[in-house]
Length: 441
Ligand SMILES: Cc1cc2nc3c(=O)[nH]c(=O)nc-3n(C[C@H](O)[C@H](O)[C@H](O)COP(=O)(O)OP(=O)(O)OC[C@H]3O[C@@H](n4cnc5c(N)ncnc54)[C@H](O)[C@@H]3O)c2cc1C
Image 1: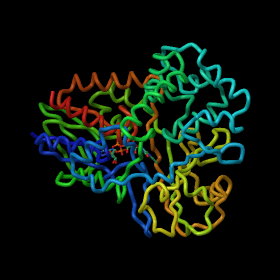
Image 2: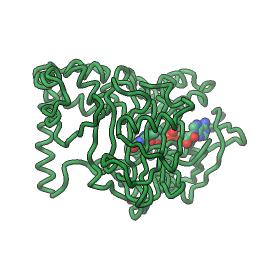
Image 3: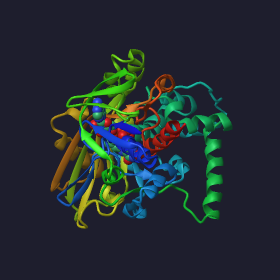
Image 4: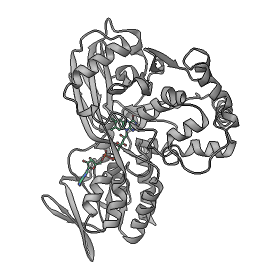
């Protein structure tokens, strides 16, 4: 049986690997580059991630795939010493300790912010979906949104809290609210249970961040070892007994076809073949982002560079939404006497920023303002992602239903990718395992 996978990001590569294990004869068709958003670049002794820098150990799917594909020797774990994270607010960096209660009494929040925290257990739960902003305003306060939840949402999803769906992005938190009536009560309960589990298993409370010695791309390339890959852009699909894909350089057909491409690319491919589906998936919007990588001589840099990194109070974002001290997080990202710092620019809240012509100056100015880094960098690299991260807004559930209906209607066609089932590397790999079940069934 022949299978075609369109798209060679983590979603397509993991699906291709798993299909090969099912004895399919697999062809991957990729428009631009293997890795998609997960593209790693080795230059001047630096290993630069232009997309994801790792994945959490607490979800099993990607780790399963690492072991299943025999890539475990390449795994690396984030340095324990670099776990400190900060929020830039009121012109200074505030440390986020493991225990969120500590933030209540160190001057980070105003009295009003503290009161909203204490009142939260008495706020009634809401069963319907709502935006992240509405959720935080209903249960806490504007201050909590700007200083804590907003920066995290912005840092992880490059998202706009006023557009993002709670249920589609944070289903577990909505469940906790429903189960316990209060987020704080639910979180305390979870922490107690986790602590008990961690101490009985002699484990740690927080999940480790993992990556690969030579970057995330090395894993995707490994998954595609032994799989045929052609570079072509699929523009159209037609059906005549079998499905036919029209590329720019050739036409292709197979018994099954897996699409692991962004939603806007799906819209283009299916515009003539299934207008309703094409329109349904086009409602997933993308936030743009640029990734700036600065290399420094380590000597003379402030102590903050030995931490994980920091996010920004939403009211104090200029262009950059997060700063990561990559070579402190993972060994081998720079020579010992060098430091690799990545700045994430833009996202849904600063849509024009990634396209500015003076990104180098923007990065330098931000590192001076927020981290007191005044030394000149010895290296600079940037990559602009015009459509970096898909945004799951209210109504995302309808998009997922359209995808399910589409697969039911079109036996042999399968849809995956980060536009639908979650944006993390873990989610993308889990979606491939789920897809394989559907193929098998
Ligand atoms: C800057 C950044 C930082 C991130 N950080 C993290 C992180 O730390 N941890 C984490 O878990 N996740 C992170 N993410 C999210 C994660 O990297 C992505 O969600 C994931 O890599 C997406 O994989 P994918 O295969 O679904 O899509 P993509 O990587 O977008 O792959 C889709 C592929 O399809 C190809 N394609 C498109 N159209 C066509 C066509 N018509 N024909 C053929 N091929 C086509 C594209 O060229 C591309 O290669 C980050 C994302 C970004 C952008």
